[in-house]
Amino acid sequence: MPPTQPTHGQFALTNGDPLNCHSYLSGYISLLLRAEPYPTSRFGSQCMQPNNIMGIENICELAARMLFSAVEWARNIPFFPDLQITDQVALLRLTWSELFVLNAAQCSMPLHVAPLLAAAGLHASPMSADRVVAFMDHIRIFQEQVEKLKALHVDSAEYSCLKAIVLFTSDACGLSDVAHVESLQEKSQCALEEYVRSQYPNQPTRFGKLLLRLPSLRTVSSSVIAVSFVRLVGKTPIETLIRDMLLSGSSFNWPYMAIQ
Image 1 (cartoon, rainbow, N blue to C red):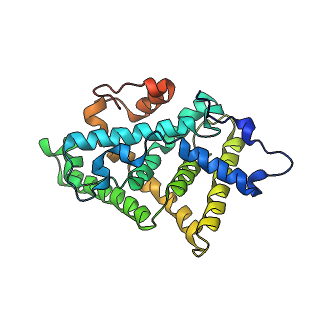
Image 2 (cartoon, one colour):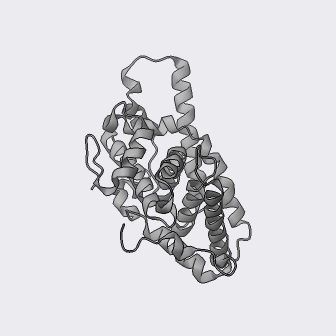
Image 3 (tube, rainbow, N blue to C red):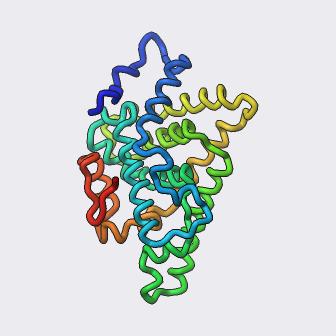
């Protein structure tokens, strides 16, 4: 564990709830931000050029980086490493696609339909009209969710808090301590609320608008996102990939490429 990695004890509730303390909230958000494995620019120069048409290989590599980033970030934020490993896997298996959408919005990932279709191999094989329509509809939903987040001009601290709120969900199956996970989500939500209040005092509805974006992230089909990884992992289920990434950490090797 890196020396900068906080432990649960560092943030334990003592003599009341320290969430009312601004320094606590600032420190928590700073640690969430520090856990990001890549600066936005490390996702690739394509991220900064929304109008750039990306090829199949670019889409696959960028998608892989964002999935890896989501898992690495979770491994290094406060509290998450202290959970039972089975709980860590359960949380990431449920929320990886929501974290992916948030990362996509944060780095302005180009979501052109043609490369995604190509990456899925749909253009090379016969398919029914219904299948094409359904796939395109899922792509549209993905694009809409990213665009709605971008329209709010969410900053890096807000993205980190939103990802923590998404990750610490008691909806995951088989959690060993549901109440503890719920408390971590509440901590993250309180941190976001205080941050928004202090940084955007002239936008009283901003906090509510940010929270209202989260439920709709689950409308994005995880199977559609997964097509971006087909060329890298073949038929390996994304859930298995998530588990392997979590357990092996920075030593994880993609089957057909390495994340630098």
